[in-house]
Image (cartoon, rainbow, N blue to C red; front, top):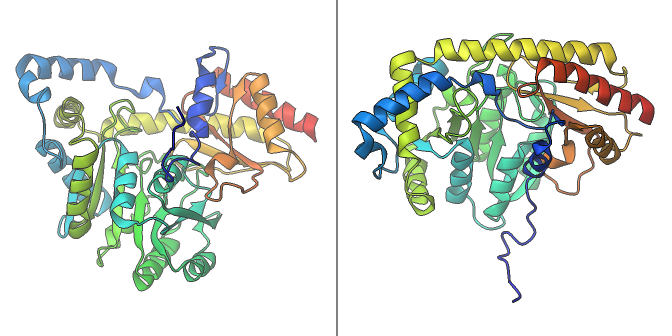
Length: 395
């Protein structure tokens, strides 16, 4: 039978990162590609104890349908933390539990964008978000980044050149894939531009709690007095990625439509895992646990940066993150990125090519992403030496 795939999906390709994951079943592969949290960061014993209590004493609630907006106790905990930790107001905003931060991004696009509308993003940007926008018929247009965030002047130009622009998608803190953080000055400037031009901002912040250097910078949502920011967060990087429990805070009018859109998709987020998150917060809190995870990533990041400083040719540029999971490396123009990625994989090191993060699918990239979260310390040292030697040979 010949299948006529929908126009929204016919030209979409699988996530390059998900495809690379298939190679990671080889135990000899050094997984610099995966964006997974470190397995040792999972509080397995505490979660097992809490899970046992849920199934012993509240199994009917855990196994039953829940409300679309989410498990009430967890919503209240998240709402309180957003206010006290991130300065995000309760008034005028609804808070919903979603199936990972990814769903919050996708639902917002579904609610706001018609076929052919434009979503502006940083260039590079998170592949999961790019595919979410494309799957809803939106066109993604990238705006060049600088060391302290998106280029403000080029953002203005992109808005003027794209009259159907509806959304600006940003990862201001510990950017994926770049590892950089947007300055407060730029956050305020970008907010004012979007307010003036009538664009909704999606502020994606799955890594913001994982700071191990520098000072916290206020979220864009914290100074949103015009109701133009949808804030997406997640427990994936701070508690467990496999739970698929995320959350969003959105202006009330947008929030109500997101509720309807979620009812169509999955009715509600996994009830048991929402209860497990809530019980963990009630009994253990999050601050001490997150501090331990951040310290783990600090030591791994310092190790990787130290090895890059020691081994990498000076012509290779790389970011120096203050938190999160990623480092972004840029090769000299004369080195073919695809050849480098293939050679690294042949020598058992998996990295993600920058083309996977390009808003313009035909764009050429000379950069690649690595992570220090999942590899062991020994793998970090060995893996950096391998990719450094490959680059030196290719030069």
